[in-house]
Structures are given as C-alpha cells and as structure tokens.
Length: 122
Image 1 (cartoon, rainbow, N blue to C red):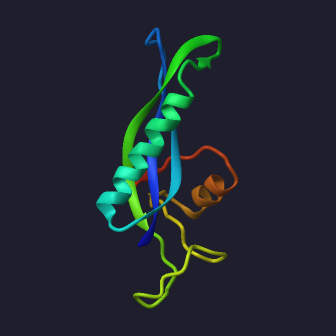
Image 2: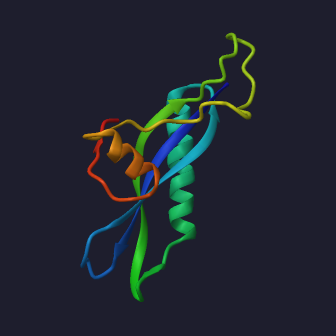
C-alpha cells in the first residue's frame, strides 16, 4: 500500500448564481493499493465533505458546497526501498504545486502572502 496526497477541488456556489465561485483545494492523505483506488478514496472523502457542509451561506446568501474533482494525485516520497514503505513522517515530501512567475521578487511576494501574477503549471 502506498501513500498519496490527493488534491481535490471544492467550490462554494451561491444558489442565486451571482458572483464568482470561491474554490478550495483540499489535500487529503490517502493510503491505497494503487492510484485508481486512491482516486476513488479521494472522491469519496470529498463527496462526504460536500454533504456535511451542504446548506452553507456566503455573505448571508444561501450556497452549496460542491465537489469539483481530483486535480492531481501525488505519490508521497519517503525515499524508502520498495517493500519497506513507512508512513509519512517529519521530512516527507507530501505534495507539490508548480508555478511560473516573472521574477524572484514575485516569488518573495507570493511567499509573504501578497498578490502577484502566477501561472499554475500542474
């Protein structure tokens, strides 16, 4: 069994359909025999979360919490030899997201929580 980081997209959708969707990327730790089983588990976890959060409000307006799909599945890297996999622990690479920006200044802006232009690669 391997460990995976499943990046799932969830959206808050106003019932009146007005305005942009607010999107969350949730990252679940999933243990499964193969990527297909990990995808099934990630979808189930997200659908259960959507059901548990049904009937939310956005600024006082009724909304729904909607599962949007699994954006990517990353095998967690523990650098263990095959057959000796250990659970993720301190120092394990859990996931990654790749961006392109125009300068090192924009990297620093992004790291400090400021707005900048990015291009999502993955």
